[in-house]
Length: 348
Image (tube, helix red, strand yellow):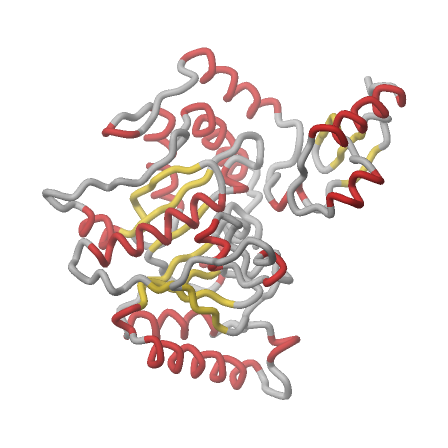
C-alpha cells in the first residue's frame, strides 16, 4: 500500500535536508524537492502517493529485465544466508564469482575469457584503462599510456574515466583532469557528416584517427576506448563500417581496443553485446548495468587470452582491485539475471 501524502512530505523534507543528488541542479532541487518512488513491477513504477509511471529510461539504462523480479531477490537472499561477503584479493574466490566469470567467457565473442569484477561502470572503465597500461608496461613499453576516446562519449565520472568522457558539461569545476587522454570526433553523422554519405564520413573519421596516431605517436598510445553505440552523448549509432575500419587501424598500429559495453551489453541493442552488431573483436570489454539489471551494484572488465598471457609474469603482482570486486551476493544475482535474459530470449 502506498504511503500517505503527509509521509511523502516528510520524506521530501528529509531529502532536502540530507541528500546530495548526482547530476542535479542542487539549487533547483532544494526548491522543488524529490520525486520519490517506492515500488516497481515490470516497466512500471509507483511513487509514494500511489501515482503510476512508465519507466521509459529503465532506471539508468540498467533495469534490463524489468522491476520486481522475485527470483532475483531470492538469489540474493539465498547467497546472503550462505556467505554474505568474501573478497577476491590474494587468490580467494567464492562459487558465484567463479561461475559468473565462466558464464561471461561463454557469452562474450572472441577470446575475452578472463574477468575482474567491480561495483559499476566507472570502476569497470577505470580498470580497463589501468589494465591496458599495465599490459604495455609489463612488456617494457611504459611509454604506451595515452588513451584515445571520442567526443560525446560517456565512460564514467571518476577522474580517469572523466578524462575519457567526451561531454564537456561533466568536466566543469572538476579540473585539472589527468593528462594522457586524446579525443577524436564522434561518429555522429547527423551533426558531423555534412554533405558526406556514410562511406565518405567514415573515410573522414579514419583519416582523423590516422592523423591523431601519427601526431601523438603510436608508441605512446595504449588503447582506444569506445561505446559500440554512444549512449549519454546522444544514442549515436555509427555507420556500419566504422568499427571494422577503426579496429583495422588499431591493429596495424599495435593499439588495444576497449569496448565500453556498460550500456550496450546484455541485450540493450538487440544482440547480447553491442560489438556483435559490428563484428569486431575487442581486446578488453567493460561491463555493468544490465549484468545485474540494477538489482545490486556490479560491474566487470574482461580481457583477451593474449592480454592475460602477458599478465602471467613471474615477478609481477597485479596490484589492482576493489573491496567489493566479485561480491558473492552480486554475482549470484547476476547469474540469475543472465538466466532470465537467456531463458526469455530478451537479446534476440
